[in-house]
Image (cartoon, rainbow, N blue to C red):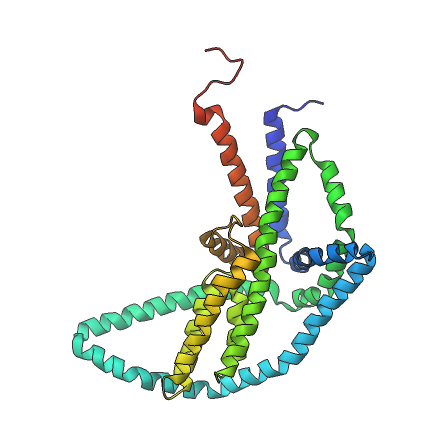
Amino acid sequence: MAINREGRLKIWSAAFLAFLIMLYLLRSILLPFVAGMAVAYLLDPLMLRLMRLGLSRTWGTVVITAGFFGTLVLVLVLIGPLLETQLVGFAQNLPDYIQSLVHRAEPFWRTAQTYLSPSDIERLRGAAGNYAGTAAGWAGAFFKNIVSGSLAVVNLLSLIFITPVVTFYLLRDWPKFTEKVDSWLPRHHAQTIRDQLSAMDAILAGFVRGQSMVCLTLALFYGLGLTAVGLELGLVLGFSAGILSFIPYLGCISGFLVSLGMAVAQSPDWQLPAMVCGVFLVGNLLEGNVLSPKLVGERIGLHPVWIIFALLAGGALFGFLGILLALPVSAVIGVLARFSVDRYMRSSLYTGEKPEGTAP
């Protein structure tokens, strides 16, 4: 049965809408599956290397999956007690930190009072309270969505036990999946779809895999560097700053501000804050001049503002699941947008030329 162009458009639109509805309805159980897909995608290049060395795909999957999750568990076991010690120490010293910050701020506040009238000071207090309340409410709602969508007991258990299983089967059977999906493509558009999928894969491979290595390297550098200069909670703050670096500028800026505040509260002089500034300065130079150019590259097709928007929107809508889906979705949208613009630039709608075979 022949289907005209309008009919095909309706079918594809209905299928896409059904997919979005299904994704929304099943969002509470999709986290381990999406996480497993992400881990499998990250480890696939290593699988290809093992296969070139003569290892079968099944045994390569066993080695890679066991090695990855075994290393992850080992790291958590080794670092967990140290992180716990720093968090407990921070909780115990928190009142002293607050008192120290208040004491440090007193000279600046007295100076401000000499230049500002009482009404200006009152307005400043009100504005600061309003902005702080708004920011705290927004941040609380954002992280509440993330936590409620990802760290419920059932989801946490499924993340621990189901993700390795999903990773194993996806790594082992990935060629079968791709062949099956390729057989479903409409034949007269198959090559065009393959080209766009290859472009999406290039963007994701360039950013996700490269940025993952950048984040891990920065997490180690910041964590060890802040601990070495003597900052309490340095390992936690450094790891957090490095991991959050997958959001452009957020990890470095937020980690620097929090670490600097901790250093000011902890140290009676400015030596420790200066060393903290030095750690983040070196880390920023390392990221901008060595890590990102070598591991990520510059032509990934994703603008930093677009990445920030996609990650925040995904986190607000679907929690941690949305964060995992944000980059693939943004890559798909970016590739389709460039493809659509390219088709538009070649069409008569842009050039003004009449299509062949039409009456003048």
